[in-house]
Figure (tube, rainbow, N blue to C red):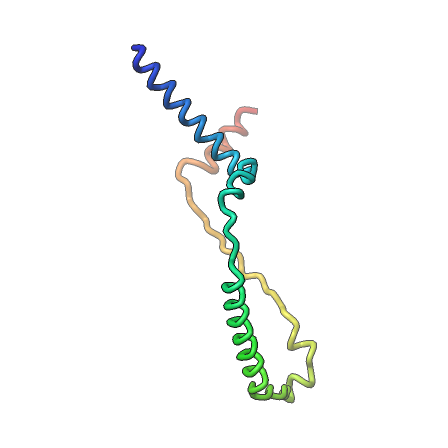
Length: 120
């Protein structure tokens, strides 16, 4: 192997190690203090006020919709359901019939058993 190839492999491995360390520190939060100092953008008071007004209008619309909702329909059970309420809620599981598949294999079966029994 030539020295130029060894140098290229070493540089690629070194670059991969640096990228891996940076990714690990970002994932675990070690680099979070440094990145938090860079991004200290907080929403302004004006933006908070605008969002609060939008939320208030949505809340009022929901309250109006709740107040103007049609009344709930009364539940009227049928005559058969009133007679046997336990039977209506009972679930009965019945297993399906088993499926049996028979396959004939040529050369097996009785011939093998005869040869085993004749050896005794």
